[in-house]
Length: 384
Image (tube, rainbow, N blue to C red; front, top):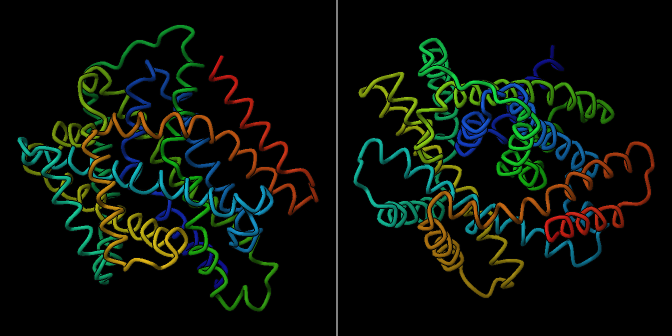
């Protein structure tokens, strides 16, 4: 019974780590662009948005959660430059700014005329105060908002699929591979593999904190694998139904910005009274995610880059200042910044993850050269 409890709690912890408000956007985009091939498109985003991040967490578990030991194999500079690059695109230059734009997209469905720059300035100010104080309200909001968001999503899914929106688009011949590639690339955009590298410590410590694993450390791997199955199943189910929703409402979503798609469907299915509740939940969920990302980047900036030469408030202000100017580019503008970077780096990171698992489980030796080759080949392919 104790083992089942550990498996369930760890599986839900992994799910919570990967399931963010931004992850509600990209599966809808995949469905909308799938031209009716929602099944194969869903497989694409499930591969890069679910399976690959789980493999990343497995790799980190095998390295005892040590980012240094994981990246040192790429050379000493990688232990500084890779975290800096990753936290930059997860932070103010990417996901943090994107969280603000997604929150604004939902907020506009309640207060239609709110300008992005005004909302972004207010959001950055709130994030600054809440991150500086580090109150328990953040963890409390997260524990409440995630279940409510899932419940709201379940209601929206049931009503949207049953009502069906307009007729689903006809399946275009020969486009299934294109739909699969769309799913693959949009899975990159979730950046959950990067999240696995940096957030896996929380899950690993959660496992190590249980007496069952303390008494028998060899149990950690099988318990992790069972937990990963729970987490992956939940995430895959949510991604699939969101892709299905995007495909179901494809015609109506064609002119809707990605950050407003979920709110649009909520209005269509729940009506003008219930939809604002869902939209407000998405806004708060975005802000709680943004607070975590702000704290991560600001701490790295202060301690590793500037060597504690500035106070915490200053590092937070710099982080949020960058995020503000990036966020006012809009959702599409942020995607144009981080999309090419992810397209180049993600295949190499996936290979690094797989080879790291091979190294720990089966003694694979070469890691740096294949990873560098994968990166080089992708750069050449894009250049050509």
